[in-house]
Length: 108
Length: 108
Length: 108
Image (tube, rainbow over all chains, first blue to last red; front, side, top):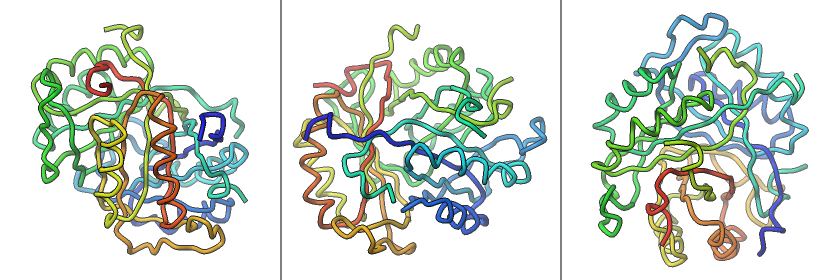
């Protein structure tokens, strides 16, 4: 395997309350995501959606981080789909570049 | 939402002993970080600060990973602030590029 | 510390069943990795190795995420070494760019 055989995709990481796990994974699957990873035992502190000065995460809250790796064309629809949610609920979403060796795991 | 509406920031990931969580998050907040995510249930193996050949992490240790997303200008002060800590305690810190859709969550 | 003092390395993230932790960390150490971080409490959904249409992860499975930061020249041998494993077992591996301030923690 050489670096040339790596394929560029995008990683989206979501931090949100675990109570909303099904909402998030359902939305991701409807958007065409083929799989996801969920990290539990997450806590944090941050600002709530539209109210940046209001600290909303209690360190005792049970948060999750959902990680998906997707083709670039899915990034915009996923972020668009999640924006109304994050306007109403605490959490954050990050996008970054990632490479994978087996493209069929991540694309339709 | 289009890719053009994504904003480039930096993600800093810290792995350290959970006992030092408050030290790390206090330092991050004093540096101007607006929020952070903490992943628990972390273990690992690595070299201790100044003694690279000495394996320090026991796999049973309770480590945490602290994730923050910050404007680029905060990276150097945060790493500088944490360097004396990581010279004395096991752990690592990584920096990577990340994009976010809502800049106000991450900047002052 | 300035950005110029950051060193570019590669981050490899593996998601696999916790039962295979020792296999993965042994392979990483034999490949020359100096340390690793393991995140527990991971669940997910995805396709199994050679059978992309077969959903293999049960959300109740206990998965782990193994994170290593390595010099670029280790990426190909590590992915090569793990490919037969991921052909047989559920899981994914991602590669991304990362920067570190203390190179001796990650290189031989």
